[in-house]
Amino acid sequence: MSKFMLLQGDEACALGAIKAGCRFFSGYPITPATEIAETMSRELPKKGGTFIQMEDEIASIAAAIGASLAGEKAMTATSGPGFSLMQEAIGYASMTEIPTVIVNVQRGGPSTGMPTKAAQGDIMQARWGTHGDHPVIALYPSTVEEVFKYIITAFNYAEHYRTPVIFLMDEILGHMRESISILDEEKVKLIPRVSESELEEDEIFHPFKEDDSMLAAPLMKMGKTKFHVSGLAHDESGFPVGTPKDVDRLLRRLDNKIKLHADQIGIYDEYMTEDAEILVIAYGSLARSALKAVKLARDDRIKVGLFKPITLWPLPTTRIRELLKRVSAVIVAEMNLGQIVYEISRLNRSRTKLEKLNKVDGSLITPQEILDSIAKIKSEVLEL
Image (cartoon, rainbow, N blue to C red; front, side):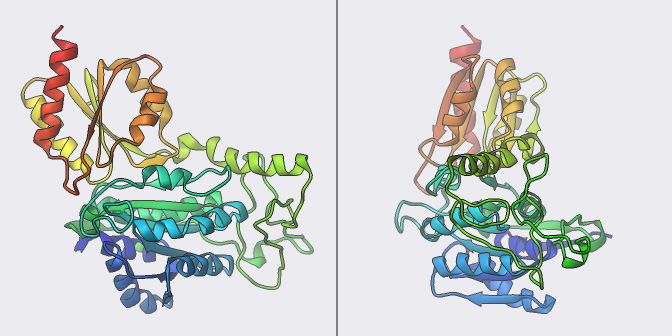
């Protein structure tokens, strides 16, 4: 039977991670993500887990990667400046295919920016922040209940696809409080770590041997089985290689293991898109304003719908293309100077009218501001 709790977004993130099986957290205090560490420090030891406050964000993600390699589901949490420091290690976890969850509660930037104000400026950084070619999975919920739900999904994705997963939030979402439903343990589906006992007798474990779907073997808990791990280009045994054929095969597999499963990874919500002539695209806490604006526009008999991507990387491109073909205009609302809008523009082969709505002063775009944009584009496109 489900129970209800009044939780802050950051608290829901920590408790959801524990529900997902996270038993190691390493972090460094930073606004507006500190409450995640505070909750972990209090609740994780009750489950037999380990909490460590590290000296900085570089050490924090390195410790989380090490704990995951040793067999524990691990997470770290930070905000913009700390996320920048973590990029090299995120690349290492991508190359070595070590499941790790990294939470970024976004704030205004660049640099120190606005520590107590919301922004969505790290969207492209989540995808392209490290050097080299590799894919990434990034989720971005919009409610406290979704935070709890999708942090569990983040851990499952990390384990199944053997990849670091970026879990994006923002200051508004991290600090708001809502009553949420907590599922019972038996109703939560988790992907566990593989143990040595699951190997066949005399079977040699190849940590990077792919199956037909391009996925590497599930990462095994540390025990008697030894395997090599290197950030260098490597073969299926984990030992470094330098031949063009082997390097090409590795990098293409890392890319394909996400690309070929994009439709399964993609999560999104739609509201009133069936007959929509105008489509609003918004994500994170801003999607809440967008939904209110869409409802107000419908009250004025304007046919507007909302598309809310929860998986930002890989973006649910198949569904977005379908919607772009059906509507007359699209408004992409973001608390940045325009980031996801460039992906929407790339997908817009039907040349549907595309409008940006942006704000970077640390405040949420209001429903009225979105409604005004809807009215403007209606007069330009639908009343010609």
